[in-house]
Length: 66
Image (tube, rainbow, N blue to C red):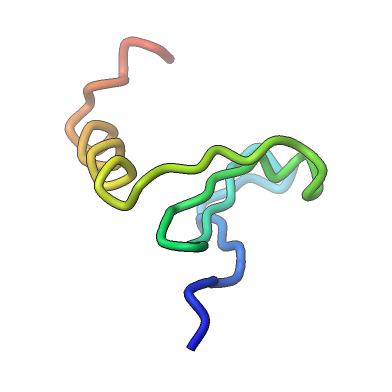
């Protein structure tokens, strides 16, 4: 069985493509910018690092950045 999933993006993404996509690959979670059409850089996080980032986003830890 493959450890790679297809790229997914949030259903709340706007029609201009202003969003990120994520997938699981080789034991990590990869994140990329949808607007780059697969040609831009990919951020690779450990599963625990990604989970920590999601928890921070859900708790409002990064709200001051917007």
